[in-house]
Image (cartoon, rainbow, N blue to C red; front, top):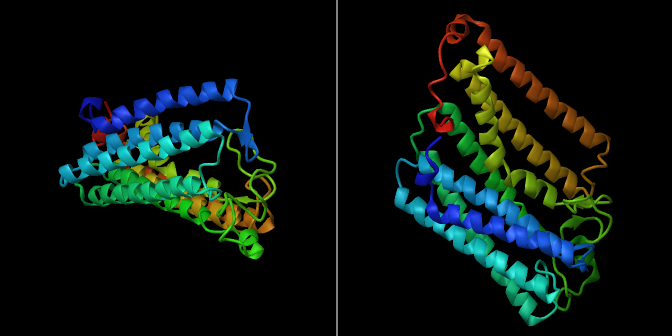
Length: 326
């Protein structure tokens, strides 16, 4: 892995600021007993700051892999920093005011603040897309690393894009027919009102669909798919089959396809108004098919390691994953 000193410095500093902001939000969770929309009022800034710290740090590292368009990538990273800071500022201001930050149209000020957030999110998504395009064009020597980085960014873009579905009026809000005067337009939940029974920590609905689930799963492909490859590289000295670069590439491809399937599955489940923890028969069958497909892919990837090339690899060091080794 490249030295952290070569990482995009504004994004690294931003991630450190988000980590400190998360600590402040954690203190707020302890000392402020206010509840908003069924959740502790400081839960949202805490979850957002933790997520953005990981997001920024991952992008800071990924930008070191650019072989062309480095200046464009640097500016795109700066845009991510600026827009994320604006978003977190609005969220925190609304917490201090005791108001909802998302979907709030109660007053002109609330509407304006949510509009600002909407603009910053669109710009942030576009900046991440620009980084993703640059990474698609980058010459990354290790094919498994290239696949993990590009797959992670593309799925994360889809996951982030799912957030736009939450800004649309819910079926209940449309049925009420008072969108011009409604105080709340948009919702996290599908089929049930926001603020009902929820899972601990995440706050996702336990009685209906919740679009935050696929949104979260999709966005964090940015970290989890590269981390999967890092795990393969670290295990390679102990497991001979993983010393084969081709095997690692195939396993990363399987993991990426399986992860994309998981995002699709959780999105389908949420849009049908079904809680993540209460799947119906159709969801369980789809999950079983996905799991079986991933297992078959893993078996096929490892089976190819049983040939002569794998035997030779047992005595060879792992030398083609420099992107993921110190």
